Length: 463
Figure 1 (tube, rainbow, N blue to C red):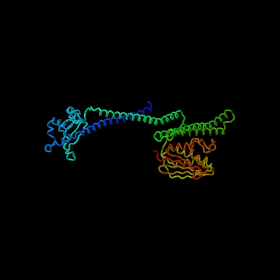
Figure 2: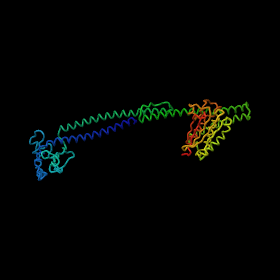
Figure 3: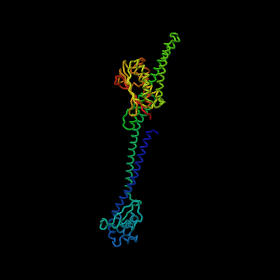
Figure 4: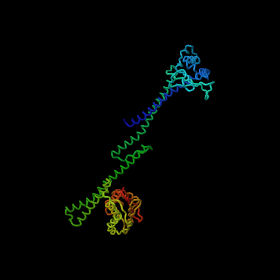
């Protein structure tokens, strides 16, 4: 059974149940109401009987004891002062066609039966007996109670009831048809966007992430369509990034492999001799290939949440000082002045080797890209439960449109694949992966010194 059919049946069945229940209740209420209406109409014909009962009431012996002691006296009293509507003959009066004798009862002022029908049916009505038709408080002498007939032989009454039931059935049928039409339209309205989402999901499953669904609703289905479009956009970006990742990785691996192959073939052909210069070039290509593989391994671990494995309580100031000393020869060669602003100590829960790698990568980037003579400023401070590390350098500055992409894999600000200005293009990506694996955040902005500022924060205590 399709979802459209299920929704339609659910709505239609609910409408049928509600309309059927209402029709039943209205029918029962109509029948009872009509019975009360007939009873009130019949009670209006008892004016003479009520008047005579009021005159026959004896204040000294209240309750009409003469009628209570003799049932036949009550029946005779009723026949004497009540007759069916129209002009009945004496035989019709004696036969009691309305069964008044079996339905009418005389009650005292407390509502207790004095004479007449001993039982009270579910449907009944009563009329007070008053002195001179004044039924003020204290003036009521008693009541006459009239039960509804169990069976009515009135053709007109039955015809009226059947007509009302027919009208009610016709109205219920119209309501059911309208409800069915509304159920169909609602089911269709709900199913149209679901069908569109289904088609879109099949498109995504086939590998096509370019399809988008028009968001023309503001309800929950509209929100679902918006989420689908975001998912499709994310998958498209991820697919593009994956293709670029594979392309760039193969390109980066190809260069050192090509160098090694050329050197080896040259040695095999006797073009070059295995001297110190040749071996140094081969070793440099091999080291470059090893660093690239190591960077790829780090980025892979970052995806598998296995990058940070050796956490301990470390002093960030000590880690930074060691990184500065390691980078000092490169700074001296690039004619860069180093300025450090550290607190005495800054304890931190971190992987010492990984954080040292982050600071070392950032300092090596400064030595590689900053013009000589220049200046490097390294600052550490504590704020709001986080350790902050900031590295500033002097020109050249990085363009504003490039800053958001500095931490992308294989991205180089100079836009070339040359090794003269950079390494593999994974250094900043590795820094970002390590910092985020520690629960921190790294950002790049324009420096006050005229160059680039890179700042990363780490929580002092891991959650």
